[in-house]
Structure formats: structure tokens, C-alpha cells
Amino acid sequence: MKQRAKYDEDGVNKGAWTAEEDELLASYVNAVGEGNWTSVPKKAGLNRRGKSCRLRWLNYLRPNIKRGNISVEEEELIIRLHKLLGNRWSLIAGRLPGRTDNEIKNYWNTTLSKKIQTKKFTINMPNIKAWKPKSNPLETKITSSISYSIQTTELECTKASYPLHVLPSTSGVIQTQQINQQNFQEELMEEKKDKVLDYNSFSFDDEMWIAGLEFGGEINVVDDYDNDLVCSLFDKNL
DNA sequence: AAGCTACCCAACCGCCGGCCA
DNA sequence: TTGGCCGGCGGTTGGGTAGCT
Image 1 (cartoon, rainbow, N blue to C red):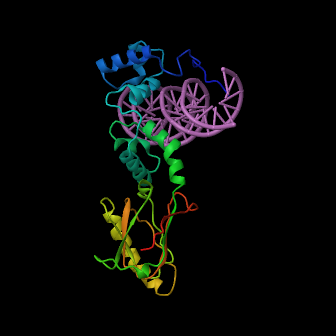
Image 2 (image 1 turned 180 degrees about the vertical axis):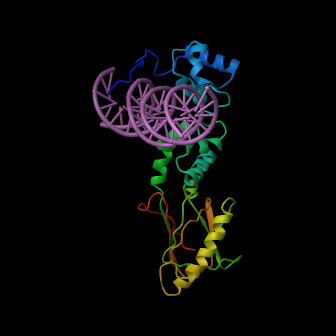
Image 3 (image 1 turned 90 degrees about the vertical axis):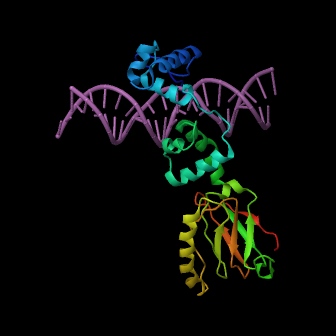
């Protein structure tokens, strides 16, 4: 493995910061404030590049930084924002107080990208026709056993043999729901020709309601990050 | 205990856009 | 208008370490 040089061509320190360097940098920035990073090393008495000082301050030394233990809520938000914004880590970090773009980028690359790749669901709904709940005969509730991973998936419904629409049970996806209900109405016309239903761009939280299912069918919940892996979330006989 | 492997994450690299002379 | 400087950003690297054999 190629060794990373400890000093650059001008003899400036590279590599891990020492406690003494941290102290010098923190003292300087706390006294003077952020900015003008090019002059910071000289003024703070550091043998570092200004860029390196800036990075160390922003990612490690500045106040109110949260370190480690990204919560489930934060993880969910990262996934949602990544779906919305892509790899724009600084924008994503801006929505997570105390988290840095570098930390979120690392977390995504090491943890979330792998999780996302294993998300793909098939919801098998055998014998729906026989199910007659008391409260509302046209609604059934699906609860995910791995709720967090469903939250940012998109749905692609196939092989449904009767009109259905999907209602998210919790907040945050109202606009998407409306769009998809409209799309769904268009798809219904195709469904009558015994065609496969196919609509997408639908997000929901850890549970959802499917209304209007009268005949048995199969719903594939397709994760837009990975179209191959399938797991069954719903196979109990209603 | 030692060696190996996979993973995590701090830090670097290089590009880009904004600003200013 | 142009060129240099600077800060911000995303991609990548590699050192440290935990876990496994």
C-alpha cells in the first residue's frame, strides 16, 4: 500500500492532526472567527495548509458538532434527502443540525448505500377477496417488518386485478400521493384490458393502507435503487 | 497470539465558481 | 475581459481497528 506522505513538497504537515494542533487552531478561530483560511496557519502557528485548517475546524473542532450514533430519524432523513438531492452532501448536511457533509457522505458510502441495495419488496396478498374487515370493507393495512427501509421506496404495482389506490398513513408524502392517485386513475383504464398495472413514484412510511382491493393480487414494492432483490413483507392470510 | 480481511472515517485531492484587481 | 486567489464541494485514499480464522 502506498504510504501517504507526512509532509508535502513544501514541508507542510499532512495526515492526522495532533491534540496540540487542534488546540492551536481552536484557540485561534475562537478568538478571531472563521474565514480567511489561507492566513490561518501562519497566524495560528500551524504548519498546515489553510484548506486543511478549514476542514479540521468544520468537520471536527467547531462547536455543536454531533459525533457518531446517527439516529434512526436522522438516517431516514438522509435517505429521503439523498433521494431528493443526490450526492449533494452539503445540502443534506444543512438539514441535519450538528452533522457535517463529510460525516453524512461517509455514512452513506459505508452504511446506507449497502442497506439501500438490499431493499426490494414483494407484498403477496393471497386471498384478499375473502377478507371482510368490519370497519371498512375496502381497506387493508400493511405494516412493514422493516419499516425504515420502506420509507423512500417507490412503488410499482403489477398484476393487481382490481382498482386499488394506496394511501400513506403518515405525513410527508401527501403531494406524491395525490399525483399517484391521478396516475392510478389513468392506469385503471388499462387495467380493464387485463394489462399489468404499472405506476410508480410513490413513497410511504412504515405502514400503508391499500383500499379497493377486491380480488387477490400481487403487489411488488420496488425499490428504485435496486430492482433485483425481493423479500416478502406480507403473506398472512387476511 | 498472530495474521488476514473488511470496514470505518479523517483527511487529502482536484475541480469549480465567485470575487476582485 | 481576464487571470489569480480563495473557499466550497464531492470523490477518493489510506491508516486504524474490530472481527474472524
